Image (cartoon, rainbow, N blue to C red):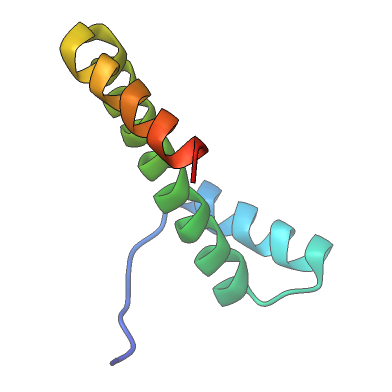
Length: 74
């Protein structure tokens, strides 16, 4: 993948530098971890919303419980 240049605010850049210095990691590693953490956060929020929707639909929730029971008995 080619290198890409992005613009950061001064505040974001200073924060990245501080995090890199504190952690002993490169700015790239700190940024990669931040992006991955953000991706995971969004994934979990979407999963939670889907679970809430499932719980609010009584028919689908009963199907879920029945499927869990089948898995539990195996």
